[in-house]
Amino acid sequence: MGRRAGPPVAWGERVIEIPLVDLRAQHEQVADEVADGWAEVLKTTAFINGPQVARFESEFAAYQEVPHAIGVGNGTDAIELALRALGVGHGDEVVLPANTFIATAEAVARCGATPVLVDCVDDTLLIDASQVSSAVTSRTKAVVPVHLYGQAAPVELITGVPVVEDAAQAQGARRNGVAVGGLGVAAATSFYPGKNLGAYGDSGAVLTTSDAIAESVKLLREHGSPRKYEHPVLGFNSRLDTLQAVVLSAKLRRLEAWNQARRAAAARYTEMLADVERVRVPVVLDGNLPVWHLYVVRVPDRDRVLSSLHAAGIGAGIHYPTPLHKTGAFGHLGGSFPVAEQSAAELLSLPLFPEITESQQTRVVEALTEALND
Ligand SMILES: Cc1ncc(COP(=O)(O)O)c(C=O)c1O
Image (cartoon, rainbow, N blue to C red; front, side):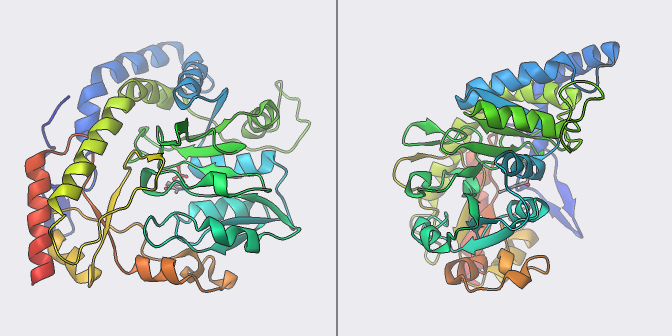
């Protein structure tokens, strides 16, 4: 596997020597395969619903160990279509954590349903399953736990309500030996370029063990149409492009090795940071095999530390700076979620990608230690 880091990239005025994610290093490994695959698509011009889409869907379903993977336009659509396939609509409620990317709540709102937020657990930052039962009402149609940063939420603790997993950040992760995607009735994932399995544009997929949900999502993604110009239900245009399917198949063959490299890099960070004071390293929940989409530490005075890292050429980031109930889009939901609020002020994502080298990680840790001691 290539170990060469990409050239430095500009971040405003500054030059970032170690990026948060290095997509060029991944592309180098699949470039020939993608070029050949794209040449084939260009020759046949089957840009929509080409045979490469169904091929990728069956490869991905096999990888995630579920019977169905249905490619869609992006991860947000994947959540929405999975919820709609479950019958979620106007007047319904869907429970989800306050500390997630906004898309989880957007998808619920786009179904016409109301997002009902719960807090996360302080050590793992995964949904606090103990709060879910008190958030459930007679209107609750689903819970959407988020497999945040690449580790599975404790889905088995959520009972009595259908679970749609938000697996956007967790392709290949496992909980108690079961691959994500098979922990609830359905799951949604994103192939946004920076994800563990990333396309060269937007795309996503619904995973499910249910034949009925799979059939419904297939209709919904294709204008509600089982056959050309038959539209028994109102649908959407949300398909996985053939060109993206080619990229995803090429990358899927390497995903297990890439996830393993992420695990090794995460273990190195945890070891390197063990003696650095005032840094909280990520905690893995018992029973989880994470895929480390992000390596998120918690530090005091985070904004100053982040600026120092950027000044030192380190492309650290924040996932996410604002809990949903503090955003303009979802502020009307109100509520108080102390763990989500406190952690949002402390979170700091360190550069992590399969090809990151030990010397790059050493530099990150040195820069972080300096920033904390300033
Ligand atoms: C947790 C989570 N949910 C949903 C999404 C939405 O995916 P997309 O950007 O493909 O719509 C993302 C990623 O962007 C995400 O990280």
